[in-house]
Image (tube, rainbow, N blue to C red; front, top):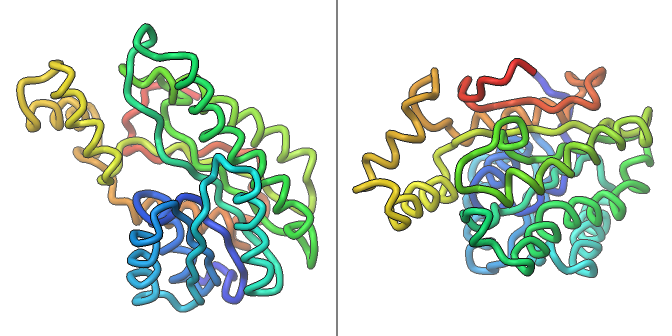
Length: 263
């Protein structure tokens, strides 16, 4: 299926690894020019080189800390300067620490809010004028299935990410019809983040070994295992594309059927 995004320009936040990288990969394989972002310049450069191997669009890297307002503005400006405009924005950020409520400090709450919510707010604010130009564009907010179903030990993710869904739904009306705004809520995928969560549960003494911890994450997933990151990326690319032209204000689960919520 031709997604109709060849020659478009996309910014994908926090995309030097994990699900962000998978989204950048899917968009670049479909012919979009993609600005990839990360804080670690060495890892970012390696990701750009890897993505270019399969890309049919151009891929460039831009190092930026998403918790720094000035650097989010520069990330958007890089795309406009490099490719002459902006058609798609994918907001994304690394996960906050895995902790219980009573272990979590005020500083960690504030840091999680800056990372998960304000990074999206600032990126969208900077990107909107460009997305509205030349016929409009799209925004996809990457969150977590913890928005629908709380995950033990992830109080920060469970609580703070819900703000992004409220923002997404509000903006789907405020920015219409020029800009479509959707969210994706990934469950457990085979990424470094999941590796950390599996190992962290063992370190906290919840499980005796890695295998037991791994099984605790996957045993209730109807499709049997962690999701392939590329499947997440394919969904993001679809939501950005002309094939999703009548979809906005939606929050889509991609978790192998793990969540039991009806809505």
